[in-house]
Amino acid sequence: MLHEYREEITALKTSDAHFAKIFEKHNELDEKIMEAESGRNYIDEFELDRMKKEKLRLKDEAYAIVLEYRKSKKQ
Image (cartoon, rainbow, N blue to C red; front, top):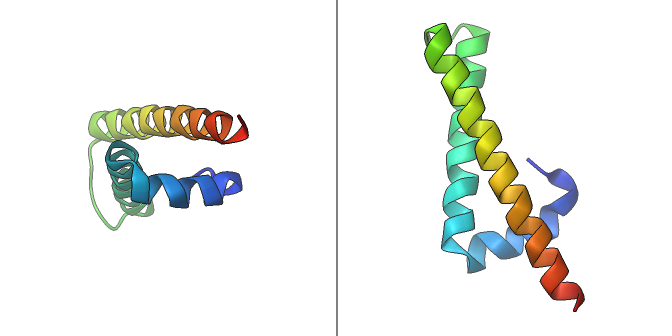
């Protein structure tokens, strides 16, 4: 997730508990979705859709935090 912001993500994961929680939850959902889509684990289509939307929401929230962090470091 957001590979081009690797340095910022590393710093935020250690300094911002909320960001770390968002990042971890996003990665957990990503793994569950991949398992379902590969057929290793069954998840009904409605739950899978809900999980994908939640994953995207978390990514958007994490991205906003990263951008705010970058902005604060440039000042």
